Length: 103
Image: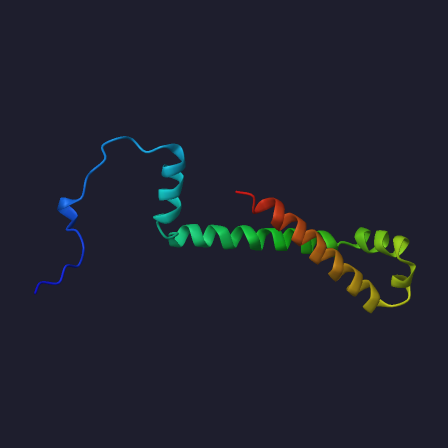
């Protein structure tokens, strides 16, 4: 009694036609190469650059004055100013990371 485990690869039919665009996209997604070290570093440095620019933009004194003119409670307490700037930082970073990530 012989157990069959399926067809041998050499006995399967071969299609010589060129793949369609959808098939190429599918194959690229299934068998894409893992990112290289430089690609990983590049992606992380882009994120760090965005974080640094947003932080620096919110750290300048004219931004403090603008926030204090819009939210009067920030004039009395530096903690409220830090809380408002934190919320602004998170909102701006979320927006920019959504826009930048569209690659």
